[in-house]
Structure formats: structure tokens, C-alpha cells
Length: 342
Image 1 (cartoon, helix red, strand yellow):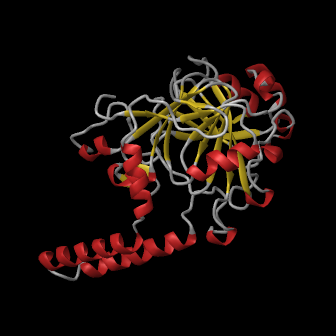
Image 2: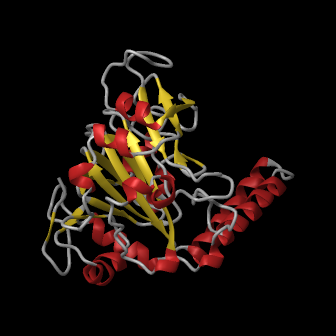
């Protein structure tokens, strides 16, 4: 899009645990990882293979009449289908059988057996397929949180959001475009909870979202077998360029006690952040007791105090360095040679 400069995501080849932990992970920036051993999944996971080996139970799926899914306004339905039926439908451009329309789009985000208690883990929900998938363990075993199996119809685009845990997005089959935004650009993304209200990142309505032009857009295209490292709090928007199958691996960047133990989806803010937001909401309600000019004055004082006490000068210095990057330029990489993104 013309209103935002497009920055590329650095690409690393022949990545192993040592390279990841020493040269990639400490940067806390997205990176495409190539050459990671994933097992037989990249060769085996055709539509027919998935339908035969995948699962013998129904799966809960998102169904939308349009390919651009919007979680805030829920422009989709939740439906259940036998897994083999779902896989074949998701790979079709036009359906003989459907819920809404013959061109409806499908999306599977695997769940635990009891989503209120169990996390998603491909080894438990899809054990036959898990035999083909080699879990990249670039972290300690006790840090592991979930492995989410995902399938998308061609053309499916998911809303922009952030996750509170670090994430390896493993693209097993199909091609996928990913657009990312730094946590530092949250003020320009018009947030509602963990999601951006700007649904169409390619053609945004700038009369409604004028500040969106200030958000720095990072972009990459994942090929089958590629992995995208998405650090916690980085916003991402995905577009399936083809029928695609992937696995998201989430792990805890912070100590376990920082996270909500009841969170089986891994999308609740860290406990301290959640408490701080609750305090802020109470403070804002208290300010409503004041007349407008007083409310405005004390709100600005609160903002100044937050800036002085909580903003990071180190991150500001890093931002200044990033601002000097050239559009489409070579990505920074350490260890094995890195190149600019697609």
C-alpha cells in the first residue's frame, strides 16, 4: 500500500537452536527461518493424506461468506464437520455443499479436548499427523505452552492481533503472506483488546483510521517449510495465498508465574499487565467525576507520569535505528547469512 513504507523481515538459513538463541532470539524482532528440519510433513501432507490420516472426529471451524474474517464484528459462523470433510472443503475454491454460500471460506484453529481446561497440542489432538511433524524445540521444554494445528482456505485473511507468548509459525504447505507491526506502533492500530479495528491493512479507511499511516509495516511471504518467529506482542495479519496447513508453537518468554493459569488459549495478558489495566480503568472512571477541563489536565499528568516511569529509552533508541532502514533493504542477520524478506 502507498500510505505505509514496507519493511522486509530478515531471513536466516540453516537455522539450528544455537543460531536461534544466540543471534535471532535476543533481537526480539520477527525473522523467517529456513532449513529447519520439520520431518515428513512437508512432503506428506496433501489433501488426501490429511483426510485419511488426520482425525476420526469432528472439528469446530470458522465459516465465513467472505475471505476477510473479522473477529471483532464476528462476520463468521462456528460450525462442526468431520475432519476429512472439512479438509476437502477447505481446499476447494467452490463448494457443492456449504453452510452459507458456494464460495465460503473455512478456517481451523485446533482446540484442546475440553477448551476450558486443555491446551491445543497437535500430539494429542492429531497424533497420527504429529508423527510426521518434528517440533522445533528452540526453547526449554518447561517453556512450551501449545502447538496449534491450523488449516486455511485459499484467500483467507485473519484479523490483526498480538499474542502474549513467543510464537513459531510453521508453514507446512501452501504459501502465506504475513504483515506485522511492532508493539511500539500500538497507538496507531486502533486497538480493541488484543485486536486492531483496521481490518483491511492493504486498503485502510483513512477517514476512520488516519493515524494508521504512522504504523511501520513489516512483511514476508512464507513458502512451504518456512518458519516465522513472531515475538510476543508483535501484531500480525495473515493472508493464505494458497490452501495452507501450518502449526503454531507457543512458548513462555516470561516466568510461568507471570501468566494466568486458567488461560488455555494463551491470549490473556500477563497477570501484572492485566492488574495494571484494571487499575487504569478505575482511575479513568474516577476522573469522570471532574469537569472536562480538570479531567483533561489530570489525564495529561497521568500520561506524563506513565511516560517517565514506564517508557523504555532503550527501545526508543532502537526505534531510531530502525527508522533509518531503507525500504526493501537487506535485513540484519547474525550467524548464518541473512537476507531481506520476500
